[in-house]
Length: 290
Image (cartoon, rainbow, N blue to C red; front, side, top):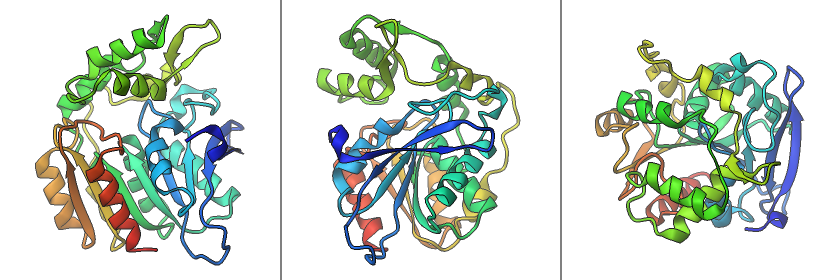
C-alpha cells in the first residue's frame, strides 16, 4: 500500500510530545457501526509493521496505527524514564480521546499486546475485541535475553542489502523460510535512511534503558489478561516463538471465555501478519463484530 492509502495524523502527549499515527479509512457510511481497529506495534517497531493488516482490511475497516513515543515519526521522549507501559497507555488514551473514539478493536504485537492488556485493566470498556500477536501474561526469559542482545545498539548500514543481510544474520531463526526479497521488506519496515545517508533503526536507542533488566522479578500479568473479560480475543502465536510458550498459550484459553488461539506455522517472535493462517484468523475475529 502506498502513502496515499492513509492519512498522517498527530496528537499531543501530556508531556508535550508530538506523536504520530496512520489513519486508513474504512467504509464511507458514517452509520456503519464498525469500530476502528487500533494497532499498537512492538518494542522497536513502527507503523510500517502493520502494513500487511492495512493491505488486507483497510477500506472495509478503519485502521489506526500508532507510533509509540520514540518510534517512527513520533517525538523521542525528553525523559527516557517515560519509555514504560503505563506512559504508553496514557498516550494512547489521549489519542482515543482526541479522536473521540469510545470503543475500538485493540490489536497489539508483543509490547503492543502488553499495552493492550494493561489498558484493559486501567480503562475498562474501551475495547470491543482484542488481538494479541505472540504475547501473553508470561514472557519467556530465553526470548527476552535475545531481545536484550540487540535492542538499543545503534548499528547502521551503507545499503539496504547490507541491512537485509544483517537482519538475516540475527533473525533467521525467527523466519527460516524468508528469501532475499522478504529480508529487504523486513529491513525496510524496521529501518530508515538517516540524515547521514546511512540506514539505521527507526527508534530511540534509549528505549533499551527501561527494558526488562536481567534478574528483575517479572510482574504477575494474569490479572491484566483477565481484564479483557468476555470480549472476543484472538491470540496468535508463532510456532517457533521463544517469547510465548505453548503452555502459557493454552492457559490463556482457559482464562478467557471468548479466547481463540491460532498457531502460525514456521515463524517465531513475531508473526509478520502476512501469513495466510494469521490473516484468516484475523478475518474470523472481525466477522464476530462486523
